[in-house]
Length: 320
Image (cartoon, rainbow, N blue to C red; front, top):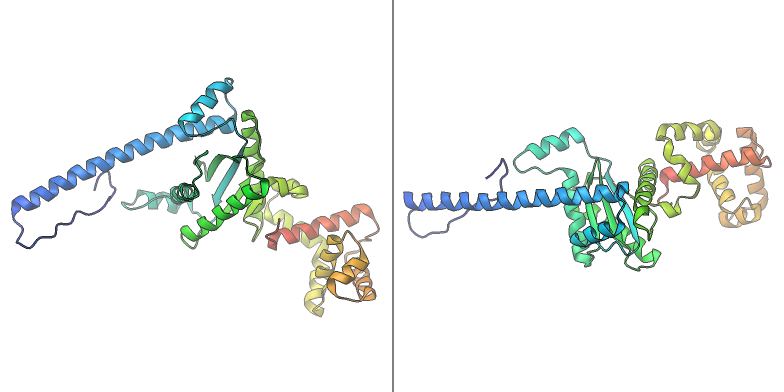
């Protein structure tokens, strides 16, 4: 044990009784081992500090000499001449107070440290080296090269990372990931970081969409400045009568409205997708207009209703 941290146990397997010199030998060996581990941990902390400092420089774009930054990146095995993207990872179930208490225990580590170790383990297994990862506030941040991968291939890598984290970390962990746009210019890494943070906000709003790519956000970008309760109130104000009708009558008005917008307000396509007669769909649409007091022929009102439907889908849909 060293610096309030238990590194392990020293075991002796013998066939004869142990005498005092044997015990002293083991104690000295344990002390030497503890000092070695302490030295390694000190080196690790220093290296981590260098990583975090360089990461902060990249994310803030607080530099003028690009060639110098590229050169410093090579020290961290980071090739900044390739297109880069920023990934922000958050454990929404983490309790900061409990995290600190756990870290202060002899065998404790913070949940962010655990996730960071799992991330490094994943990319070692993948054979990927062109990245730098560190802890920034409540999040883990990665700046990583896409290494010429197609967008779909890069997205699959991040999707696999999320699966790996969910399987590696304790079961009560709720991992959310936001991914920024890929950029070829080093100065634009800071923009990708902001993108990733915006995408993460949307992931945290959703019940099931735990991985969000900024490129896929579309109109959802405007929701990142709102909190969950504000958005729920917006949906309820417009759709509560429809919810009540479906609950009391066991109807399908909400599903019909979602499909109606999915098919670009095409009644025939809505009817086809729902396997429902055209007149039935028409009746349901008119019922929705009656319950909400909104005419779907009125562009502004129809748009408000469509936004409410999309927010509703966000809260339960993992396809965003």
